[in-house]
Image (cartoon, rainbow, N blue to C red; front, side, top):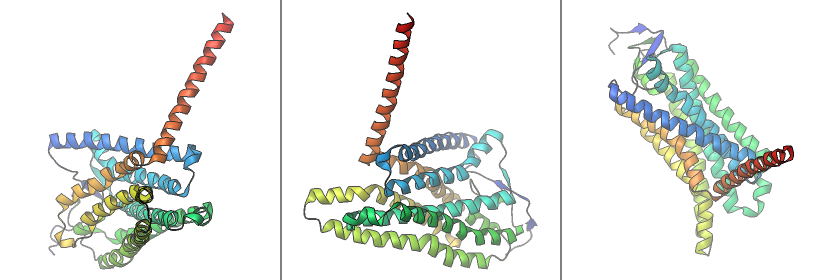
Length: 328
């Protein structure tokens, strides 16, 4: 490796999606719209689950956790595009960059584990429906969700510690729209062989292979149970209960495979930014859309909350009318 341009870095310059002013303006508007829709959609799902007692079930409990993760991940990764376009400042401190990497990796791991917990919930609901409420009680749901959050953040700690040991970089320009692990590894001139081995063995197994294997095994049993149902209407109903979750799983895993599961030497940072943009901007907005458009329970909850809001307004209007009549 050529070390002629090696220097101790105190801050990074985030290059963003493009240097072209028109394209930057288009990306800013697109990301702003997507981010606002992501916030609105996921906050709506979260509030629906909290406020509507019909949605106080294990499936929607995990969906509320998924909404929090999507909001957090989008905010952490997309805010730099919005801030740098408005302020013109596209720099970030080394500490801020490394903390962003830690948060993104941890939240991504959390989301994979939550999706795995949701697949287990669907497995119990379809393969063992008579004992569903006994197995998936509130204690187990809270325990699974807590393990998902804790494991994700614990897994990211060694990565953060190793990155803090890296003090020199070939350049301080990060060819990305946020601080991601791959661009930083390509820039680093420190010996990060342990970190790469850790990511390959521990990170991939805990946050990649393990949740994927659990999800895959769950759906093998789910599909077998669905195929054993005699009536076509019963099969359709059973598949409908897990179709939303399966769609989200496929989209999320596909984006991560294209983004990370390739040899480091073959990764092109320019094209990798677009895979990352899909993963951090498009996938989080798909979750509330898929669960609201394809899920009867969520659509019914929206109608109930809408009717409740309208009836409250009507009662308030009638009450004001009666008061005015009394005063007259």
